[in-house]
Amino acid sequence: MAKTVTVGIPVYKRLEYLPQVLKIVASQNYPEIELLVSDNGVNGRRIHEIVRENYLRPHRIRQNASTVPMSIHFNQIIQDASGEYFLLLADDDEISSNYISELVRLFERHPRASVAMGVQETVDEGGVTVRTSSTALPEILSGPDFVRAAWGTHAYGYESFSTFLARTADLIACGGFPDFWKGRGNDDALVVKLCFDNFVVFSPRCVFRKRFYAESFGFSGSTADLARAMNDFLKFLESDPCILRFARTQPTQWNEARRYLVRMIWNNYHMIWADRSQTKLSALEWLQSGFALPFIPAYYRAVVHTLASAVWRRLKNHGR
Image (tube, rainbow, N blue to C red; front, side):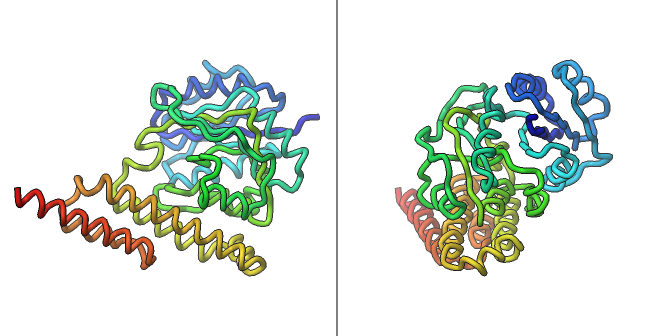
């Protein structure tokens, strides 16, 4: 018999995409799916009505009495899952009809794998594809090799790891999503925890479609919120039990992986600080927010360069 896959769909206040994602789950060609829709927005009976109208298969709906932080909500869904495998699917994203069956097949072929994913398409708010990750994917990579490819060389062009297939027991054993501020970066951190000392498998024959807009990639929040989340990520790298265990047993591989991950963290913050927040903050607030991360030499060199360029532009414009 096929092993059950729980598809967890977290919902907050945005409901307009929910009917479509329900139909996408219903179209999966895998026979054993447990749909678990979780309401974190106190929407009353509205979620029940939407699911009943758009998903005719058996399903479960859970509702929080009050809204909880994003990571806690995601972990609640994992804890409530009854399937051997688990996939978290945001209400505004999509997967191809063979996504689950293809990734389960890979897991069955590679029992030491802890993460499975397909090709990623980035789509705009209207569903038009704007970028696609590489289809020349290896079938399997070790965890350290995956970290190198994902955040070191960017070899396969992935932009998000918000949706992938994993074993439910593995997700629970590693502690699930870390509780970063506003949930920013918690999906990347979960993949890192899962893949060390394990393997990641890929299929070029199935597709995850990530809908891109400022809110979906965490670009709409304040610079202060982003700094707090990135600091949470940096602390996580030094304190998470799964990572500490890997660092003790594989120090050379961990040092390399840590270098890639730290660079990813400060690059993301610097990009938003330099390109977006300068026009939204006062000069003093912008200056202070540039030093909101702990001392990372490469990051602080980038900050100094950005500040010097900003001062030069202002002096040049003032002299005209």
